[in-house]
Length: 261
View (tube, rainbow, N blue to C red):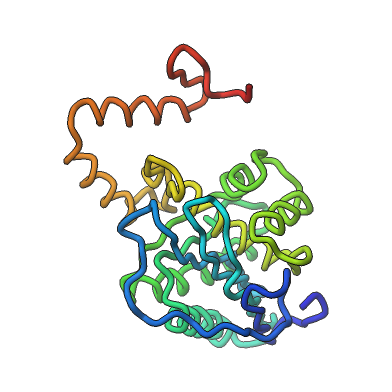
């Protein structure tokens, strides 16, 4: 994939290589229900690194033992000389095909953030919009994560460099080589970030900490609120203590949670 040019949708392997360019060997899961209603079980996540020139997509299955498997990865590209409407449509169709083929439990996408390069921001927002709309049309929950959240979740460092993220993605998903190109790496990382922030493999649901682009609540956040309303006072107090422990300077049992011990 490293040598693939924008404008060609490159299909990735099904858990067999670290990057794109291979052929899939495992058929897609059927369109039966996923596991989004229970964050303690395996989940299939479509991670997206949005972009109009290059848009990374990665389908992973994350397990409750905090391991994961690459199901499919690809980068869909468009060229700057193409008509804008055609470029946006190409991204939309790629997203629709993946959503229909792999039936993810949730779509996790990197949140658009401010840059000095306005055209890049606009293009990223346009790509994000059609991907989000495609998921919403299929009733698939959408969650947003900032670049710093993704880096912190995957490497424990919100300012980690790209190579550090790639190494951790390879380790977590047990890929035979480093994922390439960077768009594929970032899509993998977004999916892993969401899995861990959603509480897969933990005793609590962290989806309440997931931010959406405009501050709206995701389907997972609303489900978490409904679940919490059914907890006993003691259970609610314990969950509140867990959340405080994850906040900067938070303390549980007299020990700060902000630093590593």
